[in-house]
Amino acid sequence: MHLKPPLSKVLAGEIELSAEALFSFLCSNREQEASDRLLELLKGSRFEALTLERDNQALSLRRWLNRADWFPAAALFIRFYNENFARADAIMEAFLRDKNDLLPYPDLTIMMLLSLRMGRTNEVNEALRADRFEQWIPLVKDFVSDESMPEFIRNLRLDLRYYGGRTHTVLGLYDNYLNKLMDCFNPEAEFLGDLGGGYATADLNRATKLNFTSVDILSPDIRKGDPDYLPLRKKVNPWAHLFLNGEERAEYIEKQSKVGWRPWNVLEDRPFVDILGDYNSYGFVSCGFLTSLVRPYEKEFIISNERSNSLSQRSCLRLMELVAAGKDVSLITVERASSVIRDYKAVAFRWHKGELIAFKGLKNDRAIYNTYHVSGPRNMTNPELELN
Image (cartoon, rainbow, N blue to C red; front, top):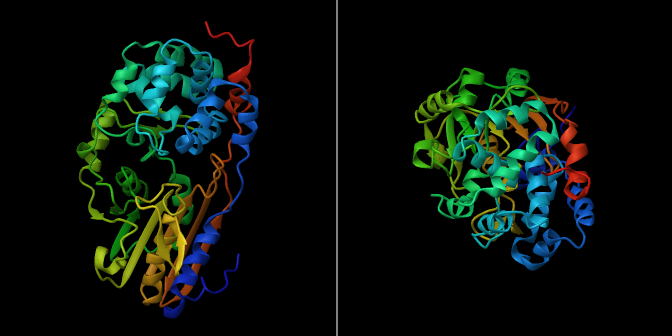
C-alpha cells in the first residue's frame, strides 16, 4: 500500500492535517448494527424499558448488546434481568450505581466476580475454553443468586469501569501482530513508549524483548489500584482468554510494578518532548489506545480549531509533532478500529526527518465467528432454553 501526503511527508505547518490523516487511516468507521438488531429482539422487555428510563446511560446499555452478541455472560445476565430472576435486579442497580454513561463491560465484570470473588476460576476458564454457551448457564445463575453480590459490588474500592473495561489486560494477545511488524520498528530508539499502556507494558516487554515505558494517565503499578480484583488473563487460543491462577497473577503484578512510567493526560496541551524528554529517536507501540472509545474527562477540547471528543486525534497530534520536528519516529498500532468486536487493524510506520521510510499493514486474522455469536442473541429471548 502506498501512502500519500500528509502521512508520507509531514511538514511543520501541516501537523494537524497529518494527525487527522493518521486518525482517519486507523479508523475503519464501520457501523455496528448489533445493538439495533438485538434491541428489536428485546422489544417490550425490562431491559428495553431500562434503556429508555436511564437516558444518560442508554448509550452504554445499548453497547451491552454488542457484548451480548459475542459473550454469553452478558447475554445471560440480560436474560435473568428481564425475568427478574433472583438478585439480578439488585445487581443491575449496583452496576448502574455511578449514575453516568461510563458503564463496565458486563461480561468481563461478571467473569471477574465469579473468578476472583466467588473462587470459580477453574470453572470460568473451562467455560472460556469450551466455547459452549450452555456451560455458562449455571455460572451466571449462581452469580445472580448470590445474596451478598449487590452490596459487594457497591463496596468495591474503585469504580466499576476499573474492573470491567477501563484497562483490559490479556497477556499474549498481540504477540502475532508484534512479531510480524517489528521489521518496520527501530528497536534502538532512544525512547520506547507504550501509549496508553495500562497494565500491559510488562507483557509488551516480554513479547518484544525490549524495555518500554508506559505513557499513560494510569500508573502501571497494579498494586496502586486494586490487585485483588483486577482481571488478568492470558491468551491460550484465538477465542479463549483464561484468568491467571494465583501464582501467575502474583508473578505478573511484580513484573508490572517495575515498569517505567511517564504520566500523560491526553488532553493536556503539552508536546511530547516536554512529557517524555527531548530525544533524536522515539519508538511507540499502541495496542488499542490510539482508536480507543474511552471518553475524555472534559466534555470537549479543541484540535485544529474545531471541537472534537476524540482522544485519538489528540494522540495522533502529539505523534505528528515529533515527526514534523524531524525526529526518527517508529509506530506500531494494533487497534480495534471500529465498534465491531474482534475487528482489528495492525499497521507499522517509521518516519525519519519528516519522511515516511517504512510502512507495513497486516490483514485482520482475528475476526472470529464462534458459537457464542450464534447462540447468544437467540438465547436472550429463547423460551426453550433451560435455565434451571
